[in-house]
Image (cartoon, rainbow, N blue to C red; front, side):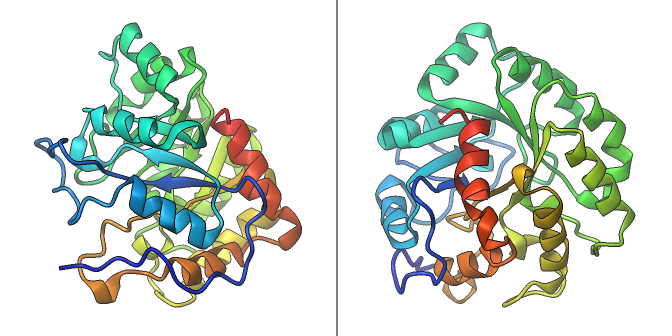
Length: 283
């Protein structure tokens, strides 16, 4: 049984007022996992648990991302948005078959983004990128796009054509390794420079090849991105760290926060933690 930590010694980096966690999942009872996705996380970490983490880390607002376990059934997401109230926005899983009425209901509940997850267990992959972009852009939503960044160069042309604002998720997830000199980083910098692409600092441990505690490979690229375009960086905890299956593998959220936000110059942290995500997710 995994034991998650919801409190502890406060991080050394104090978050500014209004800080927004833009990457996390939460769960409530009564919403079973759907075929095609992973199982629900043990213990169903939910709103009450996450509020403890908010108090611990100094988070004031949150973007709840549809979990893969629920595939394109957004009922759990809507329930969690209801439980969190005005402090929350959502990123849902939609398709080209999502009706205007469904989109309007999601928007009214606080959804401001659509998820593309082109990795095992993902509900909606890159094959649907343009169709989801068309639905999202009609409602002023952004896209959260996650795939193996090793293949970024193959997708650049499609990304350049997106109508919506979009986020390259999870530090780009360059599973084959990355450095500031990589061709993929050059492409990423060009995409960000076009003005409608954001880069999310979250889940560094999922793709780092150098590993904890410093994640040097991810850190080198992250520092470059934060120096180049602080107005296009956002941050998330990736709580409740669904890939951690054992207590000993569960990260210390305060230590992880200090590590990751240490890659952002102090004078840019309000922009990264408050201004950028507030505009992107319509807070």
